[in-house]
Amino acid sequence: MFSLIHETDNLQQRENTMTKLKKVRYKTKARTVGAFVLLSGLLVTLFAAVLLAPPARVLAQQSAQPSAQTQVMTKASARDIRGASPYVAIENEPAPKLIVDPPLPEGLALGIFWAQYRVENLRIVPVFGTGARHVSPRVGHLHITVDDLPWWWADASDNNTIDIAGLPPGQHKVKIELVDPNHNVFPGQVVTQTFTVPDRKSAHLH
Image: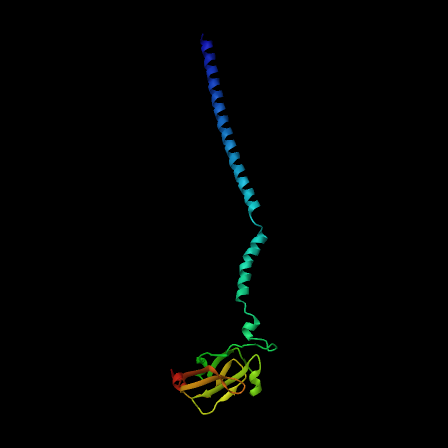
């Protein structure tokens, strides 16, 4: 009788052990399947991203296009900077313009008037006379007067800067006129600058 009961207990323990093993195998299998599904999803996503992403060369070209367009928009032509070609006559030329910067303080400290200038729709050249008034593109030069003196001088050098040296300390006035080859002032193209030359002795003491 005791042997029968012992055998029955052993059988029950074996069944319990088998049940536990089945549960462990089921959980392990379920985890394995879940990991496989997750890994498969990641691989599919990565593969799709690689296929749909544009090549590096295309990206480089796209990034270079805006800079090239900006360069084209900001790059001035030779005509923009230097004016029209002297080989081609211009019909209905726009009016000439004279632009003069304020005198440089470095020069005034030395008793020198240095003022940079530029012109538009005109070339400053040493060409004079009535016949030159019909030249195209238009030509001309500058007349410069200091402190309302009764005389002036012509500047046809086009050297970028008006240079007047030896000015004594005090207030002065320089008038710059843009004129045609026959010394007639272009309407409205007169720039007058009033400035003060410092006393170099007192400036040196300070």
